[in-house]
Image 1 (cartoon, rainbow, N blue to C red):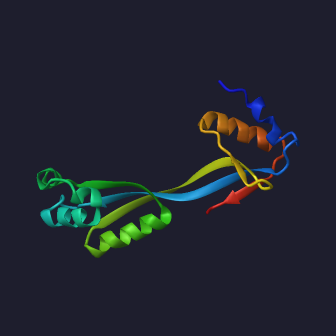
Image 2 (cartoon, helix red, strand yellow; image 1 turned 30 degrees about the vertical axis):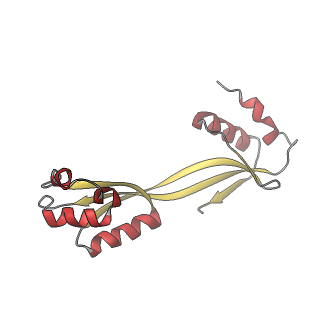
Image 3 (tube, helix red, strand yellow; image 1 turned 180 degrees about the vertical axis):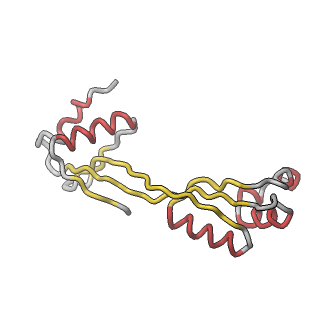
Length: 142
């Protein structure tokens, strides 16, 4: 386990300019709902809208016939809204479940450097220590 003391220059004043950046992102899980089960026309529309299904053999695609739903996965808000509109234009009903994803990182406003800590647990410890030591928090949604 890494000792977060190796990141001490972030909050001890020897390298000024460090801030905590808290990024908030609106996310959605999208699911195509088929009230009476997926029919051939529904599968054709899915195939038209999703490049990964366009390359799928028709025999595999037909295995989805009768399915009550098709999971489109998680998407950023703007992408999710565009997808819903595209799917609706072909008569497909998309259900969306939304939430906010909040993540924090460390950024130096003077040098424009981001402190990349790939381990989520260590990154959170460093962020917590930085906040405890009074580093400013900047909000971001971009």
